[in-house]
Length: 169
Image (cartoon, rainbow, N blue to C red; front, side, top):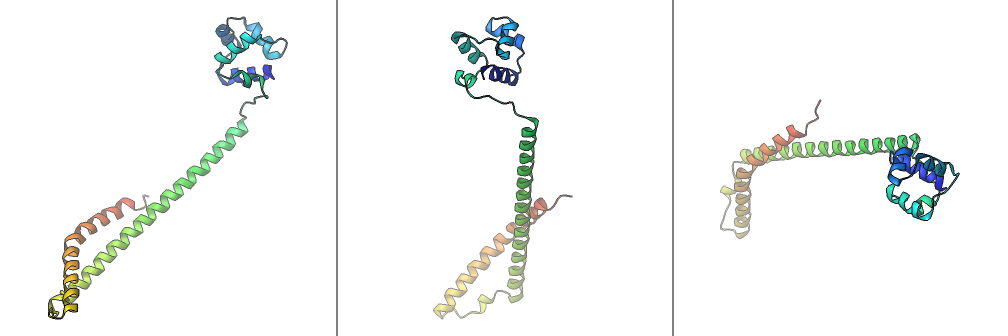
């Protein structure tokens, strides 16, 4: 196990046997013998190897480590592609929802404006001596006053939002 793990970790770190040998102050043939299982390093050297390879000694001595296969990388790549597609679909769905909400907001503002224009401020003809009519008339007056001032700003913002969220060809 040590020989296979050492070789796998060395390769994953992008080191050649020669580079590892230089870092450990041994000859390349020593590394080769260790990796072939013809000899084993002593405990001090094992600690040095773990430091150079930035791997715990237990990992070097533990179960066999396998290099990620091209198939594993391909599977991960495919999963990432699926996730990216799902995220793109969610983004598109949110954009469409926002687009239609803004269109609905514009429609509501235009409809309320048309109703107010058609009825020509109906609250002005109400009998304010009757407490119920007075309260309703005042409430309607406040609504119309706020609507007339805020609707143009909201309408312009919604129209800009519609253009910004439209589907780009």
